[in-house]
Picture 1 (tube, one colour):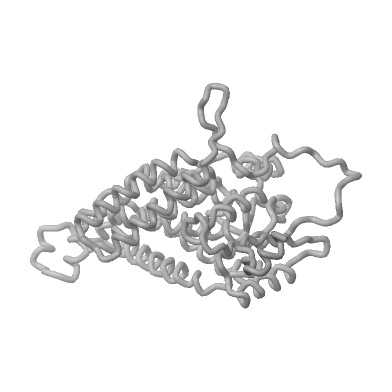
Picture 2 (tube, one colour):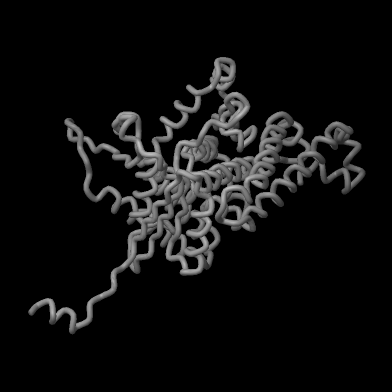
Length: 384
């Protein structure tokens, strides 16, 4: 807490030398604290939501987005009072932005819509550009440094999914340096775990680019596996099927495989192959808007450095850009990513996927797993 705020409850003799905190300032700080506490409670409750299904979690996500939207705009509007009276620190602003970035990322995982992945990148990138965590090592709080390291790990995942490889490599270098600083200052017990995380990421990036593609000037090209308007041939109406790919379950179950966290390299490539390019999704959605709404959405908000389109998820995450009072149809089929699931868990997701299929929907199941090794007898029989 800052000096002015503490003096309301501390040494009364000091208040004679300090301007008093008026009612408006008290109200601003009180409302901010209320929004901050409510946002934390809602965010912590996300882990208790069911991981499968389409509707059970949407109302809770919507409430969480709404509260974080109010909190973010409130700290922007009353920044001076919060700085002077509450003592709002830059890392606290960064933590709010990081939570919003995480919300967008988890919403992407649940909806498979790459638009939200772009929004997550915007907030994470703003934190880095504005150095919100720059003084984390000077706060003498190891838990704050851990938050900073987790932020880096999450940001790298988002960059990898968006194929922003230069960003990812730059972040890996910064991440490694932050771990060195964390180890030097606090000598923590978990420094080996963080070192292993960095090595996992490096191995993952190296494996993904093991066969580089070069342009005519011998410069490397970042190859995206996602579908885009230029790479997808149009299908003749007579050839189109009544079935539409609606649900996808991607399972990584190999004993040893290049991975980062719970995302193996083949899962990473498959999920991109089954998504449309994020830029195409945004352009398509905006082009479907009526004239007035399109003009409104062309205006861009500056959210602490992150650009959010007015009337889209930060204002109301489930609006999905409204057209004629109803949401524009989502572009990508819904996906579940499962890393080494138990059979019971796999069966639950499979049942949920079939339950949520529309009448003309199809489900794609992708399993990457080790085959059953042949016995000596089987090998001998093959040789004969």
